[in-house]
Length: 265
Image (cartoon, rainbow, N blue to C red; front, side):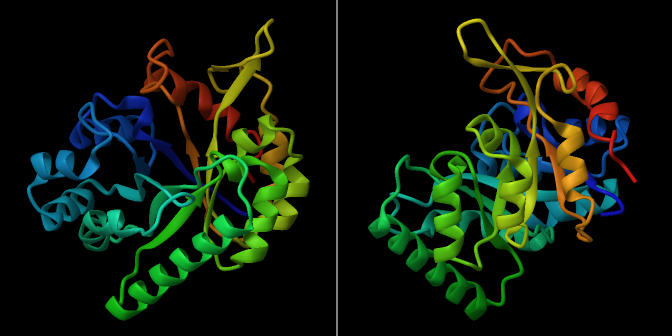
């Protein structure tokens, strides 16, 4: 991989509008953002409607600012759902702005064969809908809950080999997965990466820290990804929306400059 599409999630600056987020991205020389929150809410479509009124105006703003949205992040969970119709409000916005992916969560904890089978059926239904409507946007599933577990993730991609995966590298690593071994199994499925850093407190719990101040093996991750020729977004997920005690995203992006570029080539 000759370069990364460096990116950040708006989970770290949830108080900002997209206009303000664009200013933040420009200050840090970042051309890609991942939309999870805007103007204080995780309800993206109402927030986008207030700010831009229509998908076409949203798309025009992004073009004017030279900003690319890597993904619209929904709160939808794959495991436990009976359908994926909740993605519908996101589709017009994604299509207008040429956004490649809608993020859905995996959900669940221990996922059995029946749940895997239902999930596969739901994704088959999505693919049929996507084809019938000629959509460009696709779904990617984050390794957040059940799929942060090595064995369950491998079972899932074996059951659904066409699945697009948002690999939260920290989540899988914190649960004991070796980055290189996991990448060898899921490389062809991964279309987006989350990175963050943490350290272990005296009680054994992980606590998020500024990039480069914790234990996450970023240099190892970048080395593993070097052979991949794709421009996969490498997105800093600074979870300040859920952890308001964290420093501002501006500080995290400054710290990330050296951390996530230490393996640049």
